[in-house]
Image 1: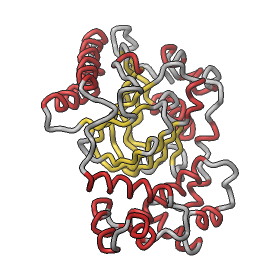
Image 2 (image 1 turned 60 degrees about the vertical axis):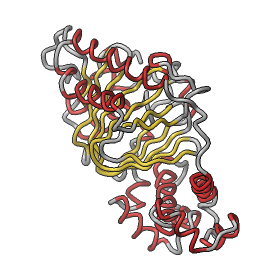
Image 3 (image 1 turned 120 degrees about the vertical axis):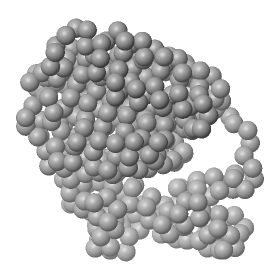
Length: 348
């Protein structure tokens, strides 16, 4: 079944929709994995076929690949090894419509909530864990929007209410909800405006912002300390208090913005364990080892908290086969791509 729009008109915007690739659920999930390869490796948590997928589609315009995705629990990971596969260094712009995600790029951890727009350098080591999320995405080459890793941060939040930032979100929504369903020429015009707004926004962004207030700097240092100590069995408020010369009460107060010490540490440990189970080598059958490595008192405790947080069990996460299907060579995309993906996508 063709992945192109039903009109097959050369004046229509080229579209790749996993639900148009095949009627077979497993083939649909494999097609989604291929579709995401320019941006990230992908694993669905415990999915059987396309269960949990509601919208997964992509459009190609001049200078930008647009995506719309709505899905349940998933993990995404960008490794530097992709630089040898995709010659264009890439940024991903995401406009989150619903759900929440927890992401890391380098030493920067951030959350994406409904309404947020984030620009992320996908040539860095990046990972994310999300549940019940719906977002628009735009993959662009560094050169297309003037992104300079030497000058710009690896993660740039685009935060309203500044008028310029609102325009970026507005044109982003227009592109995917209206422009891509019309004529190609008009859609490319809108995409050029979107790219122009991103260029203008990045012109005002510098890699080295104004030195933060000492209290804010301390919070950042605390978070970095926690991130480096997540696997440490001795991690406690007392250890943090000693490291920063504070009382326990001050530590609790400083970390309240993260949801509190206990909640933050457990959530981050669960997320790291989840990524290890989804993407790690030879993890099948070693859930107990992962639980122990991330300082859970027992497999039962780990499994209970994991299921509560992600909605699936650790064993379902280990059983995910999606990531294993991705071939090393982007030119060997397999039967799904050869049969169902338009030529412009196979050439990426």
